[in-house]
Image 1 (spheres, rainbow, N blue to C red):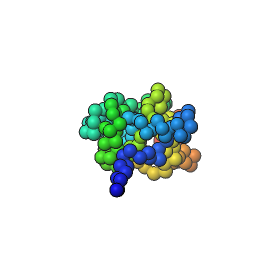
Image 2 (cartoon, rainbow, N blue to C red):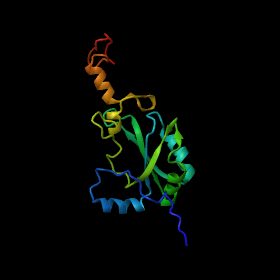
Image 3 (cartoon, helix red, strand yellow):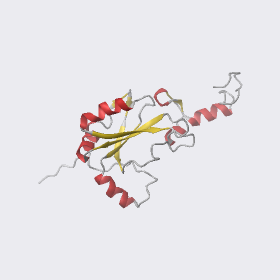
Amino acid sequence: MAFVIDSAHKLGAYRDHSYAGSRTDQEDVLRNSTTLYVGNLSFYTTEEQIHALFSMCGDVKKIIMGLDKVKRTPCGFCFVEYYSRECGANALRYINGTKLDDRIIRTDWDVGFKEGRQYGRGKSGGQVRDEYRQGFDDGRGGFGKAFERQMVASGMMPTATGEGESGAGTY
């Protein structure tokens, strides 16, 4: 007899590194979760767009947009909570890897939203991955923070409080 393993019920690589319990405890919670982490969103994607897409897979209980902890603006991720695990599994099956706002989005099981997790964990307030991005990405706010720091240090880009070599003013 052959068994088909549905990848939507398997645990992916994503883990909340601030989870207080052990890795085994976290995996137990993930196996019963109804919450998805959604990543690689455009900074301009709205909650309404996310709801329209994810409600195609089942009844959405709640959407929590990821916010830059300093600016309080969207920073490219969210949590989608469903009323049932099966609806979340449908989203993993049918939405993971699809395009939303011209970006390929990633979904994975999440342990569930807790207050404070909606904020980016990067040094500048956004997501950590945007701290190290070198290139320009219009959907994620332009240049990565590493590139911006490099440009400011070389005098090619104005700082938030002064002028660079180019003579441009503050922004």
